[in-house]
Amino acid sequence: MKESTERTSRGIQALGWCLSILLIVSAAGCRKEAPPAPEPNDAAPSATTELQAAPEAETPAPDAPTQETPEPVAAADEPEIVVVTVDGAEITEKQLGLAVDLEARRRGPQLAQMPPQIIEQFRKQLRPQVLDRLIAERLLTGQIEVANIVVTEEEAVAAIEAQGAGLNPPKNLDEIKAILLARGLTFEEAVEQYRQGLCRKKLLEAQWAGKIDVNDTDAKTYYEKNTQQFESPEQVRASHILIKPQVSDPNSDPNLAKVAARAKAEKLLGQIKEGADFAELARANPGDPRSAAQGGDLGFFTRDARLVTPFKEAAFALQPGEVSDIVESQFGYHIIKVTERKEASVAPFEEVKAQIVQGLTDEEKNEIAKAYVDALREKATIVHVSDDEPKAVAPAPTPMTPVTPPKPADANTN
Image (cartoon, rainbow, N blue to C red; front, side):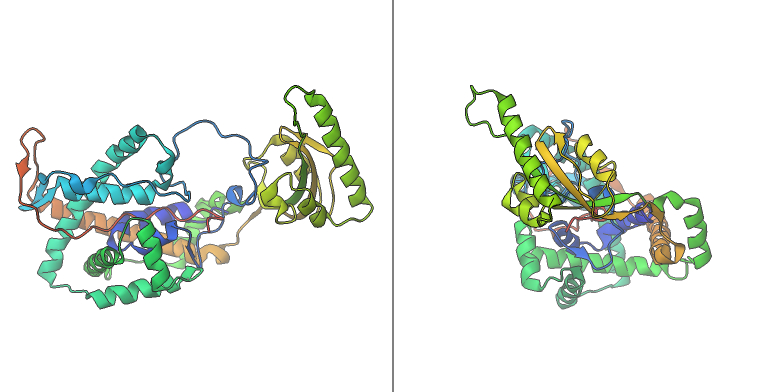
């Protein structure tokens, strides 16, 4: 069920640099208690790669989650050269490099597995948007000073702690510190970023005041015009036992190994029909070790999940409690048992109303914030210093800038 995720995310992303550090924690494996509804395509197979059809070769999307973190580019060694001045305030190559590195870490952790040229290409792609964000932040900082908005370090720490408590599962400060450190950010840097984000949030709240008007009628209109966003396709939950042909001698006939594997699968199928416990047999025959550890359970998946076609076709032909005949795939011989089914459905309006209202509200906030920043740009003197005539400046410490938050977590991204 897609619900109002896309519209909601647009508003959140555009406003994200106002308040964002705990999203680094979210990207490391946490979700809030009420995340967007799961996308069924990602719901399974959570435990296995033995069924997944090989994806086409491609450069991973920047938001694809993995457990690795790329090594940082040595942005700290960038020369102190001015890139842009905003009403005389300088943004240097070093500051921009640090911000690009942090954004690359957060948005592309799988880059650790990519060649250096891919990492550098990704950094170059990020550079214009990160620079644009730094300019916007400088413009807002000037207005924060004029408005005398102050947020203390203690307030920022308390806000981080409160947001951590709302994650699923909850995270305390020590856990947050460990996650941030693994992502290349110290807790002190995170607190400063969060403090600045809270200042910007307070500034923009004054712009939003009295201008946001989203009601149930607006939500109902959006729901009726975008029903497809709230559709949930047909799903099944299945378990399987995989028997792989075992070829110990490369000179032996592989067909003999296939015959032996099928005979073993037939024997197991006979035991299941006689009442043997499916989960126990799956654990005892770990052709697919990760799903076998779960008694063969693969979780829910849809017809367009990235699974081998023979397996999907067999699974969707079964009703709960039914067991398939032997199914052959490129991985071997499967015995499949469907444990649950979910028919295609559309979420009722009342179930998603709150999310739609929040998404429409965020979109209105985004439009107001964008107009406000654009107006500041019009009045400001912004000079992009030529690369051919860089302006060197004396080194000066500059607080790290907040990063743009990721898209709402996909389903089963825990």
